[in-house]
Image 1: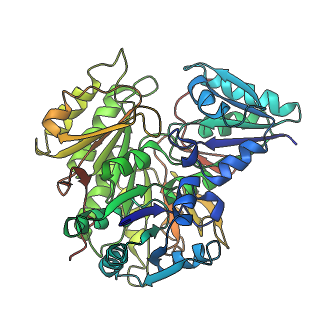
Image 2: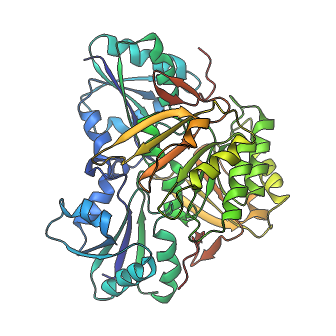
Amino acid sequence: MNKIYVIGIGPGEYEQMTMKAMKALENSDVIVGYTVYVDLVMTYFPKKEFLTTPMKKEVDRCILAFEEAKKEKIVSMICSGDAGVYGMSGLILELAEQYPETSIEIIPGVTAALAGGAILGAPLMHDFAVISLSDLLTPWEKIESRLECAAKADFVICLYNPSSKKRFDYLQRACDIVLKCANPGTPCGIAGNIGRDGEAMSVMPLKELREATVDMFTTVFIGNSQTKIINGRMVTPRGYEF
Amino acid sequence: MNKIYVIGIGPGEYEQMTMKAMKALENSDVIVGYTVYVDLVMTYFPKKEFLTTPMKKEVDRCILAFEEAKKEKIVSMICSGDAGVYGMSGLILELAEQYPETSIEIIPGVTAALAGGAILGAPLMHDFAVISLSDLLTPWEKIESRLECAAKADFVICLYNPSSKKRFDYLQRACDIVLKCANPGTPCGIAGNIGRDGEAMSVMPLKELREATVDMFTTVFIGNSQTKIINGRMVTPRGYEF
């Protein structure tokens, strides 16, 4: 069996994984992933073989998975959240052209937009845009134009990778772009360490989001013109009348 | 215990539900939902009490959940996919103001964008916009302007509710808007009956998507300028070099 499962393990908490993901892990010989996610999973599957590569070694990580699969092992490549949202399923499918004997199955998971949204309330009840603020692989100008267009079209905006040491002011820059067409009072929210120790959320107006402290484990939500705060939760009504 | 779980049950297949959702259902006295989704769940929890309302009776359905919870029952309100993406969590939180004694917990699930994406390949690996083509609660002009802006900003676009009997030509209209700034050869994909009997996917260029047959159980993906077809799957590379 020369097979790779590409698995979204959800936000972190074991129970937020789907049963299908859990069974695929159980069924695997080797589990490959970024160090942080492997640590999350290792507790529940102590007898499996685990292989990790650090951040920025994504290509090596995927090749490692294919090389293990070549040994007739069933391999799981794990990603936090969903494998298909800033995860590894794209790169695996690209590399698969060089490994035509390997069969690939992608098992989706709960991405941070959904898990963070559930903690904050219901920010994504209406049309929304998901944008990563990481400019490692994307020119900043493209990110800016997406922020601008999303704000103009009154999308709720969910931001991944809002900050890092090198990119400490990117959230501020993003807010300034959105502020060009959104009300400074627009309800916003942040969710951190979703499904993990230290899980936290807070809501605030857009003008304060500029100053919020975020890190690479924070997901940021910027409301649209309809978003409200109800009982401390961020809600974008779909428009039902009652 | 006066409690409502608002649960995203995932695309349909039981195993694509999270373990947390499954345990909340097990823990519930009453399960409330739209007829189609209740039928999906009923098989696995035959001993629970089930209550349904038809489509367009969403407000009644939510009130029913609150009234059951008032009887000191634990109630689950189920939604297909994720409860927070065109689901019931927003309306529940809005109505909760009238039922301050009820505690609400939202349990996220795998929405069709993720489940459909996994079947098609990896279309959502980069920034994307989710847009519903249903104009029941949203003016068509707003939907049009979102399509336009999303295409201009080179977002991958995921369309929910692409068609219904009354809205038979909406996908065609949406494609025509996107075609104003996207190449007619842009790879697109459709996924139908995700996680259910009759699951199907196909990929095609944007100019052919206009003519595709879709229904309310279809999720549509329009690639961005980077999206490719690799081995029959739709992949939007994130930009890793190898």
